Length: 589
Image (tube, rainbow, N blue to C red):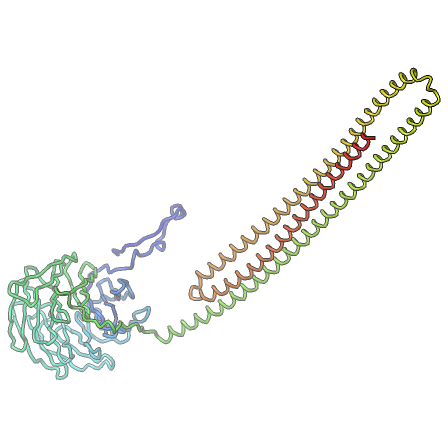
């Protein structure tokens, strides 16, 4: 069907294969048959087209998009947009139909028994419309559908119908070479200009209705004054012109040719017929229209394309739209569609309420679970700290008891040594006093005994130092082992803390993912969802504060452990100082 379609490939598509539903239009769908009808709206920035592909399309030329399209079982030959942009008149092969342009549909409203209508047009006020029925022009009321007039006089098929600015006259041309001006109220022919040697295909009028420009099949562009029934000038065009249109300001004249080009003719028209040509279509142009503000020129052709040109005169004039009067934005919606939309809205509201209740329930469950887990972790932490404190007190008590025993043994050894020394001094003094005469002999003996005594003292000192070193090494080994156990338990506690933080982070990510899914599914409730997310973040902030308080407690316990380690080291230093002092005292003695 001559469309551009696109699909984004992925590795799964390459293995599974593609289906027709996998593709989408690159921008939008276009006509794939000859475009037969074109019209532009007054109050909205839209144009309507119909084609032999049995579709009617409504385009928005402000944002270059397709607003509406619908396919029908019959071919469409002509189309006319109501000035309000709410209705469209389409000539099908069997009937002429007046249809409503709804927000998302084109729905038939009234049918008229006019077969194969090739030309139809609304009046500028929108209260009347005219349709060509072969060589007859019928005028109907848009709102009462009354056939107000039948304009008879053409001998050939009517090819073009134009309304005057005040909707009191109609000018038409036909294949028999006749151009007639009709009175709408009287239904009679008022002026005419007939040239039997050619067939006219399209015409356009000046705003004052004094001059008419007509194109014919003999490759000429004629300028007529119908009141005088004269052809002022007939300009050869070289190529057959199929359409002609004059801007609303009456200063720009455009024509479309059978070769698909758009011509901008020098105006006022002269005998040479100077023009600037823009090759646009690849097939004969079938319709041309200019917007009511003279800013855009539209053309369609048998190649199925629609072109929009931005236009202005050589002085940059021609844009007549009042900037203070924007385009209308109202659309038609049927009562049944509105009720259906309200019903769907109510269902969505109920679903949102259910989802909100479910979400609140899940949040409460998560809070309860987190609270239980935090309580378990707090109880476990307190139990472990109490256990460590008990072990530490046990170790300190054992150390104090062993140190007291060691000091007692050391004191007893000092007393025994002092008593022995005193006894020996007394015995020597007595022997010295009683046996002075044996001094020489005893002196040698005394020296010998002194050497033995000193050797014995050294051996005892070495044995005592060795025993003291063994006891010291033993308890230092135990203290190091206790320190390693405490560090290991601290590392396990830190690991549990990191697991708790990871669990909290994963919970936050899961909550964010749920929020994003709900946001994508219900975009129109974004503001309420954001408020709920803010509430959830506040609760998570409370949890973070709780974790921070637990971390502060852990830090305080670590500081207490460090203080206890410092006290143990201080006590060890004090014991060593006391021992050294006692050794010095014995050495002095």
